[in-house]
Image (tube, rainbow, N blue to C red):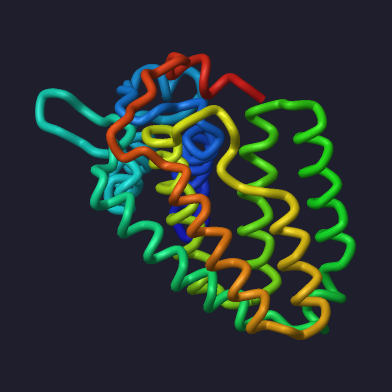
Length: 230
C-alpha cells in the first residue's frame, strides 16, 4: 500500500516537473491551455495523475483552473510581477547568507560545470539553453546554501519569474548576466557574503528593470510541441 502511494506521488511529481520545466524554459507561454488529454498522451500519464499535478500547480500559482475552461498557464498581473521580485530579493539574499567557503569548495565541480554550460549557451546564442542555464545558477546557489525550505520557495519563484519574463521582458535578451554570476561566485569563495548579497540584489533589480509591465508576448508553441522538446 505504501509503495502505491509513493508511486503515485512520484508520478504526479514527474508531470509537475515536465510542465514546470517547459514553463521555465519559455516553451509554454502564459495563457497556454493545458488540455488534460494532450498531457496524458504526450507524457504517457494517467488522467487522474495529470489532474492532481494541475491542482498542485494551481496551489503554487503556476497554473490557473477556471470552470468550463479548464487549466492554463498562469498570466501574472503587473502587481504580482513586482511582488515576485520583492520575494526573490528576500529569499535569494537569505540563500546567499547561508553559503560558506566550505560549501563552495564542496560544490566546486558543479559550479565550474554550470558556469561552462552558461558560457557555452551564450556563445551558441541558443535562447532555450541560455534561459535554462541562467536559471540553473540561482537554483545551484540554493543547493549550496543547504536550506531545504528556502530552496523549495526559490524553485517556485523561479518558475513564476519565467512567466513574468515571458510576459513582460522588453526584448529577446535573457534577463540575467553571466558576469554578475561570476562576481557572486568570487565573493562567496572569499567568504564575503555581504558583497555577494549586494551583487545579487543589484542583479535582481536589473532583471526587474528589463521588464515592461504593459507588454505581452503571444504563445509560440502548442502544448504537444512544448512537452516533446528535449
